Image 1 (cartoon, rainbow, N blue to C red):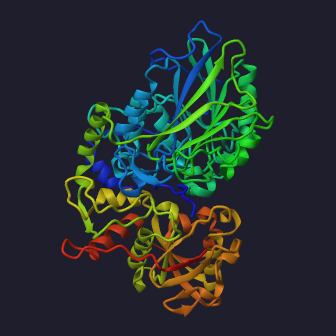
Image 2 (cartoon, one colour):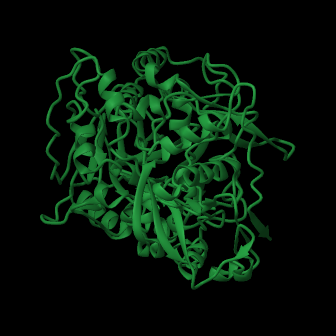
Image 3 (cartoon, rainbow, N blue to C red):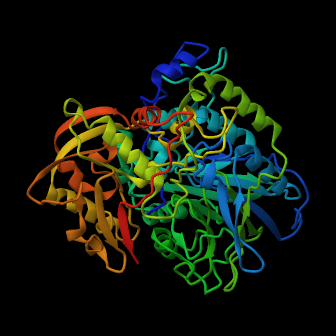
Length: 615
């Protein structure tokens, strides 16, 4: 099952609730999309201290701190979404609680001490699919937090397009939300202090990048260029409305193009921020990626990109797959080059040392060494950053009337995002909830439901996140699981089309990294992972309520609107007919929890036994 985040959040989310919480009403028009291109300079000379390589020496060590896929997780993530796996000295592994912007800010500030040359960069998905604390306010709290913790630059990710180009431009340039207005009286959202880079995203009509393609960080004579791109396949994992009028280009070709431009300007040290990722050989964040041999510890799209990107680029900071790795992949000339990713949700940060040669203006890379790169856990045993605590408290106060409302009760943790199995208990629960919402004959007449795994953003944790008490599910917690407010659709598919949809989980664009749909109660089948491609779905095993799937028969199938539009490679689902639009996926989930649980009879985790897996 692919862990990558691949869904969108509809801008309609809680519009009424958000507007009601706004202290000041006045809204402003959306900022006009930018058409900026060319060189820009980001010089945040705020980091002080003493480090290796003084101003008078030929070389100086530049500290590159990086992270990715923060997704608005200001508060420490709950359940398995808030842990990382750590290899112990004896070879055993343990789960370490990590993440939360209070700890991330402290970690970065501590890491910068003693490093006069320090730059902080990110590889996209800073926002989108965010918990309610940020998502309710269109991610303004996250941008404010990133400004405070000293982010210098980031690429866009696919989730930066969840609410479309105009909203992304607003996050960059500032201004209150065009519909919900300003959230705090007398305060106008000022936007990001750091540049969002979108080198491979252009306007279909003008052909120009919608945001700056690159920036140059400067400090005491040291210059490093940053080029930012998102995955070329962004339109496949974002709703059509989010990418309307935009064109996404090849990552390698784009990076090479702007690396040449930077080189012509005399900028020889270049870092690519790429919102595309890979899969490491180990799930432990401190695994030695290069132990089997250079480059052999990582696979997937980023490995291929890293092998092809011009040698002018000295390091790649990546993301999208929510994995942790600090690897060496040879560039086209055979020289080693670091490729890093810091998991997600602020649970890790990467510390890379780039040795800058003042004479050549380039990063020193030898035949055996690129740079020293290492991932560090953002543990919760360290002090909290006081300014981040204050930020969270301020926004929580505004969100409380909506966030703290109880919507259900559970008897134990219900794993979802953090469970590394094809089928998850929370996936089953969400599919059941969607089926229940549109099962009645006058409400869609659904017979089964399908849920995309990437749309499940967290777990439901039994332990209280606030003062609500253990086992209580609040609206805010439900929102964290289902933050997109996609509308539930019901369409008619033939049995043959339904079988094709199941096969598309493990074939075509999903063959290398399967996306296993979560299924409602009554739909069962066998997934044979010893086979390849579409053959992994055992045809004769597919049954609905015990009866074999009939290729010629029609079925009413519920799913969110993203899937109904063919998202995530499920192109056959676009062929569905007689569409009925039901409630949002979030409303379906909260209604199901309310109807099927109580304080005295909490809901137990589903058994996750609908898909039989053969390995």
